[in-house]
Amino acid sequence: MSTEDFDQFHWMLDMVQHIDMGLIVLDRDFHIQMWNGFMVHHSGKHAKDVQNRSLFEVFPEINEPWFRAKSQPVFDLRCRSFIVWQQRPYLFRCRHVRPITGQLPFMYQNVTMHPMANTRGEVNHMFISIQDVTNEALASQTPRATAPSQQAAQK
Image 1 (cartoon, rainbow, N blue to C red):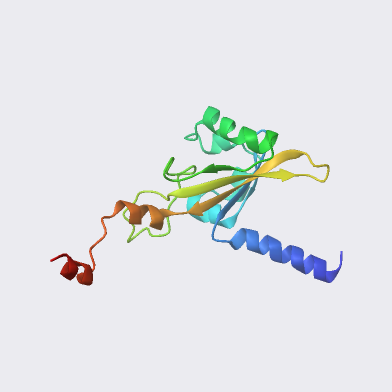
Image 2 (image 1 turned 120 degrees about the vertical axis):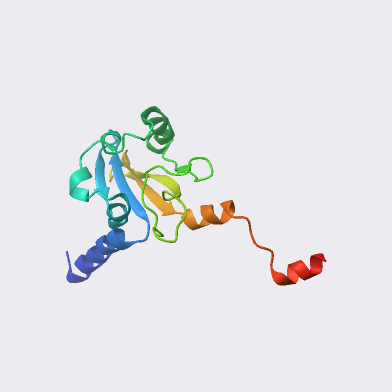
């Protein structure tokens, strides 16, 4: 491996750990293989404490039969699967980024499950991306104030 290749690999690892999005890799048995910095920060669970453990052991609040069914197309059909906050507020009960000014008890999440093929084309892992959409959820739940120019036009 050249120095340039090693640098690029290092940069990719740094991005995965510091991106403002949760990234998790699960195997077909739903054991956690990778847990990025976003998940450490928001869940309070360190990677060394969750790695190689069952997702359902670490997060017993996740409905296992539902999640297995939701994940099946990812593994079997090689297609993405989505969970949007309007249907289910969160997959992982996590803190949001506005603990003082925030009015919500948890982080609202959009979740995408992606198939991960190995070099033989087999899908034995998936990665889950978690997007914090708490601000969007809060905005949709808060009545919007009418702008002064709109108030004048309404009179």
